[in-house]
Amino acid sequence: MKMTEKAKINLNRVPIPKQAPEVRKANFGEVALGYTEEQALEEANRCIDCKKPGCKEGCPVNVDIPEFIKAIRDGNMPEAVRILKNKNSLPGICGRVCPQETQCEMTCNLAKKEAPIAIGRLERYVADWERAHPEIIEQQKGRISSNGKKTAVVGSGPAGLTCAADLAKLGYTVTIFEALHVAGGVLMYGIPEFRLPKAIVQGEVSYVKSLGVEIRLNHVIGKIATVDELLENGFDSVFLAPGAGAPMFLNIPGENLSGIYSANEFLTRTNLMKAYLFPEYDTPIQVGKRVAVFGAGNVAMDASRCALRLGAKEVYIIYRRSKEEMPARFEERENAEEEGVIFKLLTNPSKFLGDERGRVTAVELHEMELGEPDASGRRRPIPKPGTEFIMEIDTAIPALGTRPNPIIPSTTRGLELTKQGTILTDEATGSTSKEMVWCGGDMATGAATVISAMGAARRAATAIDAWLRNHS
Image (cartoon, rainbow, N blue to C red; front, side, top):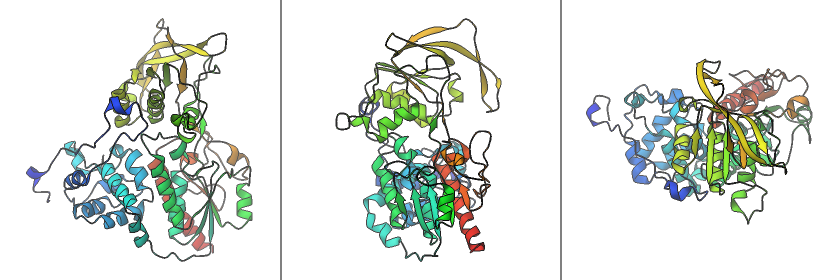
């Protein structure tokens, strides 16, 4: 279709099939069911073959978006897989959890008409097709010749997997050191099954391993070995991608009462430790009838929706700003509302109350109003005097973000940090203050998106390769 044929352009995106809210809130099955072949073709045919495609500019990992969509249109699915996997080793994950609406879809030229191509949904379609046809990727994988260099990657989350895959394709012998008993990092412990099935994550992990990458589980770098020891024992470079798994709290009275979980702990117990499969997995987690989740990012939406599925009768999102300032993706907010999560906006907690057994029973809240924008660009919430009130709850989940664990910085000589405790990193290359050590993902930026971590990892892999070639 040519740009001159504007009258024929279909401005209506093909909706993705989903479980009905009343059904899905009682199970952990995937909410979005994915496109059928007919729906994928219909959506792909909306692409107008721009001479200057804006979508590429918005992709942090530089996927050749128009090319893989054209392959779908042409019915050449192996070619669509090849194009996607050339730049993105984790398309099944990205197609599900990337915020495409603020990246590639936002810069799609059709977005000016309020109907960008559903790039993420098409990416998921291609990845799911490949998963159903595993022989395709085996046929496309060329023989990789070793260049004799060894790289250590710390962490097997999105950044670690991406950097490892890129370096393996360049001929490096790559070993990933993962602290947990399963690979995948935040993709396994932080994102619920209904949004990102763990079989999808492990499928992507298997692909990275098929490139020759070794993954060593239960290896806490900083304890079992330091970064310096890795460099002293045969590794030519180290890429740090351990994520940012240390939770942040409200720091108000009563926060140490029983029944209060950090979102990190709550989601880890639910997802990685499979509390949702009780009694098959007897994971200790107790969800009461009235649950309050504090915060309004994607993690807050995940925690609130998990609480509903674990048996809570009423789940509240407590947020000190208005809906317009919420950092969560619109799709996740919409899903939460459809499932019955109650949004209590312009409200902030001041203290928790408990019973004689030390268990939380209520939270004191007060109303807020919005003032001038603060450093984040959002309007600053200001307490309204005399508006305090008590809300009865039996479970509380602060979902305020995370910060890096200090174990690696504290055991690594010459590694400079920022004021926020992240590793000081060159944004363009991922290089750190320590020679032969690079960093990417949440350890460098603080908590951010999966795709931004992957973009940083790809830039770091390129920089590592260039540095090692020049210093061989």
